[in-house]
Image (cartoon, rainbow over all chains, first blue to last red; front, side):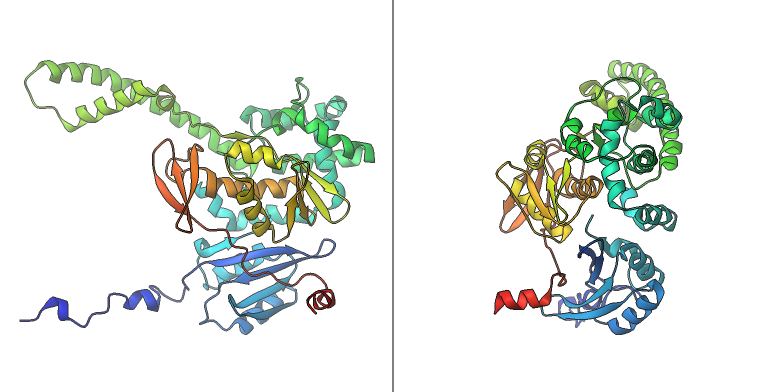
Length: 110
Length: 320
């Protein structure tokens, strides 16, 4: 007779693994910052480490016709930074590419 | 506000993009102007009154619409510096007069509404809702009659009551106790718009900041933290109790941020009542509702990653 309590079942297995398909967990924060004049910067924080941010930024640069970089931040990890107001573009793109669900995107700023 | 989340709908996106392309300083200033121009420019308004009249039907503000109007007016009216100065005073005055649609409509913005939706959607929605409501109330009336018969039936008789009867009875009592709810009315939370004025080229003043804090029953510091974190800038409250923010912002943009603040930190997440208290409990903020008694934690204010926007050489000079 097996005792249930002694089973080697890890109840947190799927929690740490990420419950479903390729979609990441955790919120993606999309922010906008004003620069001088009417220029702006868009930052995307919180994308999963599983993704190759460099590839993402390369695709985004091409898609939105803007420049962009990946910035390494000690606290927030890798952060995407794009020139101009790309908030809507990036939201659309992330959902279309299946990298994040629409309810995981949190758009900040005005 | 489930519609709020639909911001990523591609159909909505088109419209936003259009707005953004038309974003320039003049338009921004002209937007402020619509409010004080509208009184003398009644004749000019008459042309638009068809469109504006529809607006009034709802009795609510549609910012998108206003914006386009502002653009129209920009063409008609040359903008003077005098106007800019008077924007401040005139927004406060509740504008009367039938011709003045803009002012009356602009005076208060209403949180129950979803501004991200286009005008047309709202319209198609409204009549439907009304119809639904009427139908509902009619049904309720019928129900009530049934209930009256039923309730007397089972109160007097010895037989067991049914579930439906009890349910009807409960609803009846509820309706008796608060008649507002019975009519299907939602409590509307009307707020004054923020007064946003430019100071020079790089700063913006939020003139009635403390007033709005008082209306929301929130600490100015909390709102200040949120505003600055969301806008990704710095700022402070000056001697005249107005907020000075670094960067150029329009009233519409501040309104957007305020709406988000109210949604997260003022209205109850369960019953949407604005009658709430924000408490700090072991490093977490809790929202306690006075109406329904629910208590839930709210997100902490984080500014997150901030990119370097100023001159790097200047930063280096400062730190070194």
